[in-house]
Image (cartoon, rainbow, N blue to C red; front, side, top):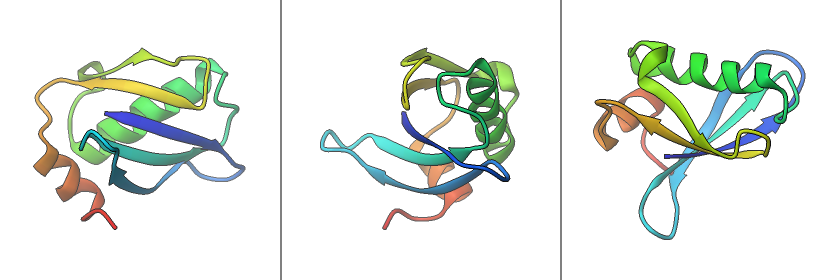
Length: 90
């Protein structure tokens, strides 16, 4: 899964999701800290773990830890779980 992070003030939230050209899910998140900040990585992991109902240890940032685009690895999470947590794609 790929996550596009937009830093914004206020609460961390999911802005929606779609599929990339390869058919993989891409989530758009806004976080209250800068994307290059380690706190942003923690916010992304916490937000996804809570929404998907999995432990934080099941969500790992595989690459892009200092950029606005992060690639995640999710243990035991299927596309249907993502759709259930975040709604259907646009």
